[in-house]
Image (cartoon, rainbow, N blue to C red; front, side):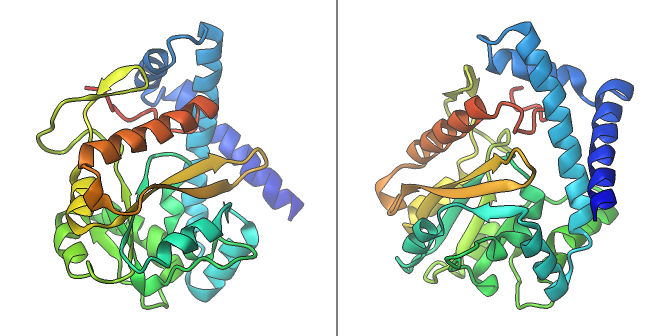
Length: 286
């Protein structure tokens, strides 16, 4: 067990060094993003964040490989024993679930979003009221079909022997949600990317004008869903602490732009606390 831990740590360190120093994987993009988002940080601080980000990125990659070994019942037990996810406020999530209406859980590229298949087994103590047949994870299909199938195999293998049927590509999201609009269902959306289609006026996020994806928020507003933000904090000893932050209990009473402003406000708070904990290789501001 000890040697396995050492091997994993060394693998992450080596991969982080390889990505940053050898192939310079989007290193310029990361540095530009960090410099613009944290203008009050010194150059030394930016360099340290840059370095720590690549260790975080390497962790995401190695955890994806590990997630591929978590399959079925044994995989769920393995994931639970690992404490990879620990849900900080299950009572608050269960309170929202008890409202009996669909919940839209807005995520960002923080923590490790690739492990979301393990969310239903991530509470220790108070159980999370998440049923796998009432749980959906949305995604954007990769252009390479083989890579897309591999990623799906990794993300959903942990639920493969259950009645989970909620791995939903973005082109099918509207129909999928409308068919379940009157049910207590949990929909998770990663919604911090640059918009795929036309956009409105930008908002201020991390000191920059930022165009937002409002599709999920717009759907929630029309269907009067419960909307919450998923906080995804890195723990010092490894793993992640998750918590749900309510945005609104009746989205029909809040316009989509207001929902997204609150979402980005919460995300900015998280990035100020853990500036390396984000996908800085993404060309978010074009």
